[in-house]
Amino acid sequence: ACGEIKAELGNCGVKLFNPLVAAQNFEYKMSNILDKPLESVFGFISVLPGAFSAYRYEALQNGVDGTGPLEKYFHGEKLDGASNNIQTANMYLAEDRILCFELVTKKNCKYILKYVSSARAETDVPEAVAEFISQRRRWLNGSFFATVHSIIFRTSHGFLRKIALLIQTFYNLINIIFSWFALANWYLILFFLTSGIQIREQQNGGLKTEGPFYGNASWITLVIRNVYLLSIIMIFLASFGNRPQGTKRLYIGSFFLFALIMAAMLYTSAWTIYLALPQNHEEWNRIRVYLSRPAFRDLVLSMMSTYGMYFIVSILHRDPWHMITSFIQYLLLLPSFVNILTVYAFCNLHDVSWGTKGDNVPKKEDPAPVTVQSTEEGKQVANVHFPNEQQEIEEGYERFKGTLMPELKAKSKKLKKKDKTTDSIKQEVIE
Image (cartoon, rainbow, N blue to C red; front, side):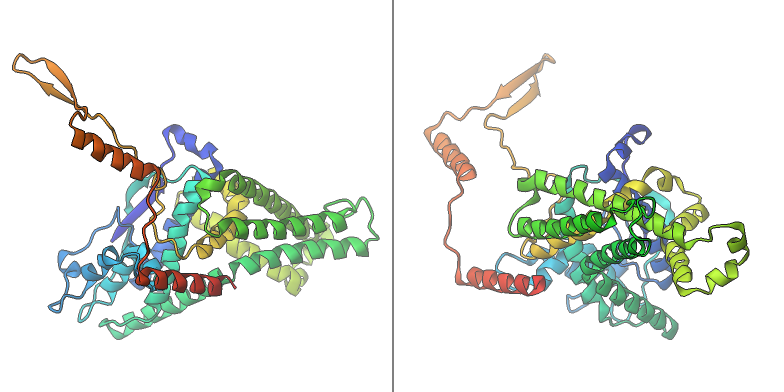
């Protein structure tokens, strides 16, 4: 079982002034309102957060052959740089997902996973763009390959539970397909929105009083599309072999740029919805006629199934405050989540580091550690150890020299093979 993980917002929610924290707060909330309860009904929660979950002791135990949940959970610790299986290396970045899958599919057992909404804990979410991208690279790659791994399952549950798990597996498969094509789908949304505005403006003769851009839709939409495509190309180039900590300004600028594009898309969408609605009292009396029209009906259904659903389920959950404090920030950063995070993740399949907060900061070693001891008289004395022996000095010198200028060691044949395999797979994925 697992509880609700909330984003730490600081005293009086002061961290919500950071749009990145607010957007993550919305993600966490909607995950706990929609995803976790739905998965709990089926009995298989795709991920129990490692920092806030509980398991039966007997469920974690391995079988007599040494295989089982714990063996799979710690298998990632045994992987080293010589592993040439990039799927396995990325899959075990999400070791908590692997553990959940192994628990549900444990041989001759019928364990299920549940969500306990009354149990709550806070987590310190990334507040800087570079840290956020590094974290999500691990999350996206790990969850993608772990989900692919969990599609084929074996279980000893009853017939009805197997049907439920089969339905959830099909649901997960659909999610994988949509996530794979998310980049293209997002551009198609932008393209059709801007095209619709252009067509309507042309039908009205390009009048300055018509349309959301007052007769300037042709060149404004052209600029938006080209800027969008150039931004994607720029993100691709910046993602190959580069850590986000080295190109902070580029990524921060990209976040702002995609936020502006999203604001334009929201404005265009609102105008399209306004035009589709009845314009006078007589037309409102004929609302049934409008509902029978595919364009109007599809527009209403799409809005209600996304934004409307967020409001409805949050109110039913009796926790709607994130809709007030974080919803707008989430909408504006959504294109960055889809484009920047996805591109960076799949361009760095070879990177299987954890990417957690502070993971990319070089560790500093204290050359003269200080220890405080109390004497028999009750006084505290500070002892500072300075290296004075020649051997200690030489060892310290070599250690710090290695930190500043790491020596390039010859790679083994196995590592070379791994690098070639990694590069080829990464190229195929990008293509």
